Image 1 (cartoon, rainbow, N blue to C red):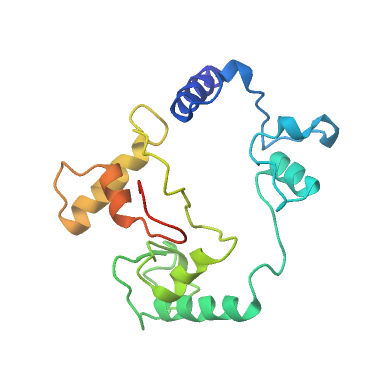
Image 2 (cartoon, rainbow, N blue to C red):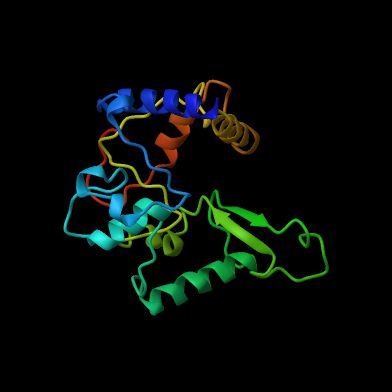
Length: 200
């Protein structure tokens, strides 16, 4: 049942992308082990031919869904991001629209506000220091999209619940009317990292 739903979703996405039908695409799971010997460059599904990643890095990414590139971000930048994060945790700075996620097991305890109580910050695009992280050559936890891409309606997909949650948050915190949808929110929140803003 789940495989049929996944195949149907893949068919819809490929249709939006103007790619070949799902029957023509060979899917490889990223969570299981796959023999490296089974990969040929034409079978890479998640990476493109380029001179940035080595063949070994591409194979690793196809098999595991991530890459670790040591020393990509200089130590000085890491320290600056850490300092800004700690200031946010101590409530010394409060960037507009920032969401701070606290550890619910200790959020109402006697501990003074610190990074030990915070599990994540999101919506940090208005914090110049933290947003600078998204401009680095390889940033984690930033959602990138080409300025030429188009929005896809998420109704009827696994992302529909996320749309409802995001629209609900916009209504709760910003008084957005019910006519606001996920596309409107992302158009408003998107920030240009590089190049020229076109569709987004």
